Image (cartoon, rainbow, N blue to C red; front, side):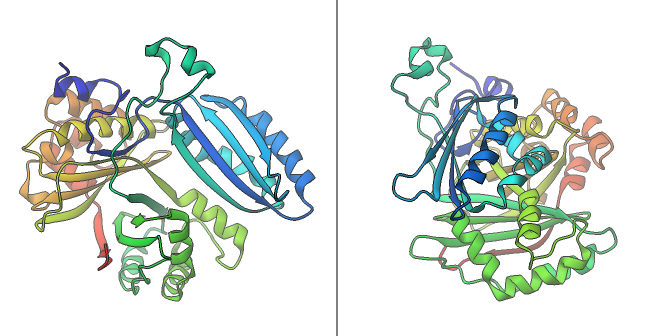
Length: 384
């Protein structure tokens, strides 16, 4: 029998609990599907750009293969599929500055793209089917979701402008939650930690449709324009390329989510910021995911649900806590039940960041205070 402590220390190679609705850390192979709409007459330019990109991607760690297909019904529609050893190396690449530079030649010939990512669950033929059972690296069982897609954006503002930016962000009018017949905005939670802003959203339906819907709302556009002068990274929302690059770099994907209990009227939403050592963001996120899985089975834990977001060295843990952060023991709120786990956490933290010293000293209450992000606004749709 596998114990809770064994699950906490071992790799996430299988789904431990049906409560886990999303995770990139199960070790199974990843299939990425990219739908591409090419400008009329730019097919040859697109093909040449793809071939150059393909040669570069082949050397990316974790990449297995890719395939390019053109629609037999509409030559402007293309399909790119790629296979990766697992999700983490793909996410590390697709969220990197290297990727931003690598795909730049495609922008002049592509009208629109849509990326879909899937773990491989079953396969007929191919290398996984021929391999020994322990080597197949397929997702062992389907995950049980709740129909909610979780995503976040993060960016930094100029030091000294934090209060002004928080006031602007807190004052916007909520956009219409209904996107279309299939998509609804459920919740938007916005936090700040120093000069870093994190906006987490929950959507039922199609995430891309929801993001585009929000961007078109005049009240949202007015807020975005109002904070432009304070951003550390310049953007021009009237320039599609400038806006695209900004939001590409701002994307903070959810890499793990676990729900331990149903809604509770006493629950409060909080966010914790874990600045990682350079190059250690994914490893730190995986560690936190293991702790959250173990905590979901601990009846003492006040954490009802947890979502971990990660990009590069930015790791954010969004938690719904019964009674709030002041109502539970720091070790239970952090999912750290012994000194060894606290020590492992410190190996992934940026040692120069505020709070890292407290974690290293075992002062979890002080670390929790440093990691806690300031809530700017938390709004739920009445239809959610």
